[in-house]
Picture 1 (cartoon, rainbow, N blue to C red):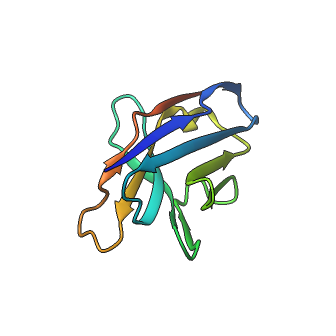
Picture 2 (cartoon, rainbow, N blue to C red):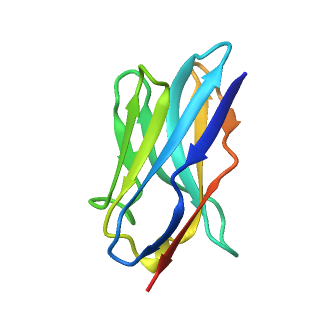
Length: 120
């Protein structure tokens, strides 16, 4: 079992920056991929960015390319999302997620979410 705990959300003005963190812990840490998702009020949850845990290969949604950077520290089992040039449309609850190596699920574990609010 893996537990994910996000932190770093908050209120920021448009054009500002925030860094989200997701600390992963658990008895059996066999993670293949981790990612950040977000869900705005009245909208479906969407993928923001993903990273393979060992190789560090990344993927970004078009809406955040060039503004957000996903990274991980494998020594601390922590996932990050650096968000720059934030826009009001980035306002959402942000979730981190993890998929076990070899899993056929989209993702196996989810954090509780952290609110990001961008004011205009």
